[in-house]
Image (cartoon, rainbow, N blue to C red):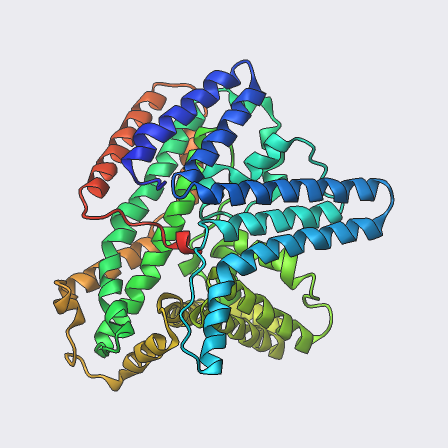
Length: 493
């Protein structure tokens, strides 16, 4: 079920909110069960059979987590470690089979030079997110940071519908205490209205901005996969269009998830912080997909050694972390290349920082020219990496780079014209969206400002709530009037 559809906005969401707060007035446990069941219905709407996989994954991880906690309480660290290994192996096995089996078999066939016809394994939606969420739960249980005994709260932690399909990747410490707090089950007008405003901001990002610029990216990248070379101008326009599309698409989803949660009095962590304003590649990864970056740092980079064993080992750890981060996004050599490229960027950045003195670093960090050049370089390398992320094959990505390197003169092809699009309109879209991404107020800050203004009960609640409802209704009409509903990009991961 998509956040942008009439089924969700006019049926599912009102019914879920009504049941949640009616039950929550006198029976918080029943309200939590209601929200859990609603989240399962939300997931089952796509393909009911995979809800059984989700339930099985939850059950196994909850039991294994309890076994880890019990073993630690019995002062048996060996048993606790064994249970943790079993649990993580179970999660990785599920992810390996459903997400990577096709990729591995296809590559084996290529290596053997065979032409075998094989069935394909269907990827369950959201499996990457709920698997990583539960791996973090088991790792924290082994560290003694978890003592969850309520299966309903654990089920909500995993299945909570605003984040279930495309994140953010949640940490148990962010959610369990909230579900155990009885005050969240009582309606609050300020949180409901503020959440609706934040949701409307995200909906605008997706329906108007991301979906508006998407045709200009598709008009270039899709023919490239068929071996058609774009002109240099088209290649750069297509890459920039996708760079903006994926940002507004995914940050729009994150804003919607945060807004929906606020309507239920629940706080989700921010997942974006104006990443295209970053002044270096490390800063970019502190701002982009923050929950995944934090997971990779805490549960992969640091456990394999982090920066504790010398420069060479630190660079290796960075590289392996980013390659696996790329592979997490999808079973494709393009995603591996994207992750490897970002690993290289991070290593080069670390090498440069290490080669200059601390005084020089401080001076460069403060100097406006240095800041500007760092920002431009960061945008450029991020844009180049997005080519790998968007391309569906290495040959397609290399053909794009070939055109971007000015080996194809302007006017040599007319991919935008062939798709019924005007190049000048593409330039205008890219210019406006770039200005919004770089200069508009951060949506996180806008949300905080709105919630702060609504903290005191006034007539503003009704006015702002009514305006937000009208805005959401207008965006729903725009989306419904289109030929097809556009899914979120990260639904594929």
